Image (cartoon, rainbow, N blue to C red; front, side):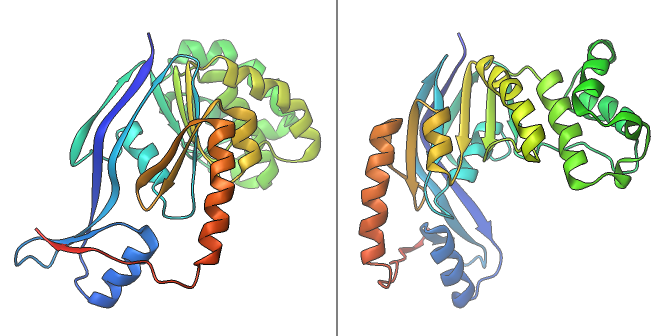
Amino acid sequence: MKGIEVENVTVEIPVFDPSRSFRGTLGAMLGGKIHSRGNSKKVFVQALEDINFSLKEGDRLGLIGGNGAGKTTLLNILAGVYLPHRGSVRVTGKIMPLFNISLGLDIDNTGFENINTMGMYHGLSKKTINERREEIIEFTELGDFIHLPARTYSAGMLLRLSFAIVTTLLEPDILLLDEGIGVGDAIFAKKSEERLKSFYKKLSILVMASHSNDLIKNMCNKAMLLDHGRIIKYGPVDEVLDYYKDFINAAQKTVLAPVPLEVCTV
C-alpha cells in the first residue's frame, strides 16, 4: 500500500547574514519565526511549523498559498532534499520529484542522446530506454532534428523532447510537482492532453503546488492551504478553495498592516 505520513514536521532554514535589516526582510518574505542561537551569528527562519497530514493511494493533494507560504519547502521535505528539524516523514512507494521537466537534459547532446541521458538520470535501465525510444521520437515530431544538438532547438522543441521522455519513461508511484507539466504550443498541447491524463492516472499519489486554483480543482481531490509555514486549512479540494477565497479577501483588507515577527533566542 503506497502512502505518505507527515507528523509534527518543523523545518528551519539557516541564514548567515546577522544584520537586522536582512533578517527582517527575509522574515517578511518567508513569514516564519526567526531564531538566533546563543552567541552565534547564524540565525534560522522557521519555514514550516508542526505540519501533520497523511495520504493514501488515490489521493491527489494540491498545495496552495501565497509566495513564501511553505509549498516548495514542503515538496522538498517529501522529496528528501531537506530533512525536518523536528518530526518525521514516512513514504511508502517510489517517489519522484519533478520540479523541472528538463532536468538532466544536456543541450550539447543530440535529442537522440538526451533520451539516454535523461532516462539514466531518472534511474532507468538501458534496456527500458531502448524499448521505448521509438515511441518517444515519434511523439516529439522532431523529425531529423532528433539527431542535432539540443542547443539548436527552440524552447518549444526542447519542451516537446522533455515532455515525451518524462511521460513515456517515468513510472513513479508518487509524483511531486511544483506547478503542472507544461506542454508547449497549442497544437502540441492538444495532442499531449490525453498522454498527460494517462500519465497522472497511473500514479498512486500526486502532490502538487500551484498558484492556479483551476489546475488544483481539476487535478486534486484534497487541498492544503499554507501560510507563513503553517497549515491553515486541509481537506476536500472544493472546501479548501472556497476557504482560500475568503482568506485572500480578508488578507487584502489588511494588506497595509505589517506582519509581526517573533524573534527568539535559543
